[in-house]
Image (cartoon, rainbow, N blue to C red):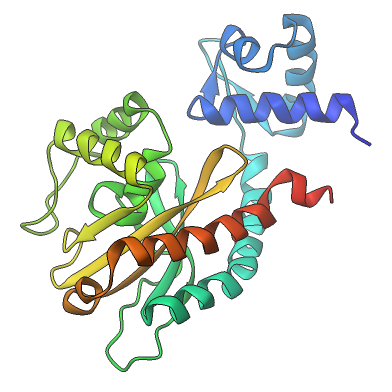
Length: 250
């Protein structure tokens, strides 16, 4: 049985998250459908607990109290992901990774290593810009083109290799292709000689993480890309189902 006040407080936090971590009352109301008075009361409680802060322009932003919860949750997600990452290793023969978007950066939170002697590693905890990685493309493809362009405007698009896409319009076209086909590729854009294929993890209707396999370019290119992506999507879907609110209430 749900508790209405808890559900509404979570709706407010999710509305802030979907607006990039900061929103005004009107934006929260539009997202949640709640009356202004109800939103204001919920925000006062969240402010008192440190889960929300109020900015000088009277807009509201996610607060530092969520950081501690997020750190614990992130570590648990990494644990829960291991069986699914292991399945991706079995499917591809290559190293599998789980990554999330923290602010404007991609962070690798879990990994299952390939059994091959020559294999790729992305250190858990490593932070990279999203434009040069398959996982970053998947995560930004889960947002609107306007949101993605805003991220690129803040971070810039430095050239990591000769293959890196460094033009915003070209990247937005790439993200549209990712949405259409359901997976992203990094063809030596972050590191020469390394190719990567990534698929989204959905929690309900949102893209909350990305799962990928990476390896030497010649081995990744030898795989059937569409067949690999389809198998990876099935694994990512099963993982997303475990993370979804419906699963938690089962």
